[in-house]
Length: 150
Image 1 (cartoon, rainbow, N blue to C red):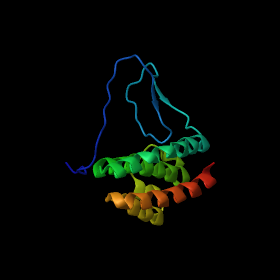
Image 2: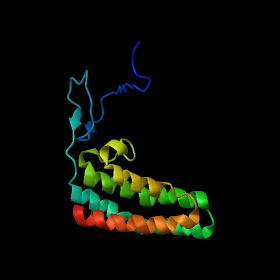
Image 3: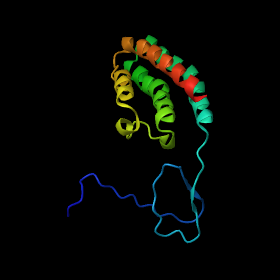
Image 4: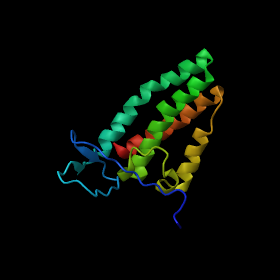
């Protein structure tokens, strides 16, 4: 048929009952919305989002807790969820503020190459003894980002 193998069409059919609000960067085409339930929401300010991400830093203790308990998989999961995901979102706020909430999707096109290389090096850490060093590097990077975003 000549279509790319990775082309997806997302179809959503719902009954009435709630408004559907899309973010500023969400692309959508409504074929039928007779009652106008689809809305485009306003983006929260960069400062509000940055402050919320930075305020989660106290949760980094969960990584250390799992390292000390000898639970490498849980330590790694906490490292990704509590350290790298907020860092990635702060980087998005800095370089692609119109695309927050995307996680790592499109990271290579949304962030500068040197930033993605540095981020890759933090994601590449897998051994429990490496995680404290990664957290230290991520913390310094978050401090730099915080001073430019807030």
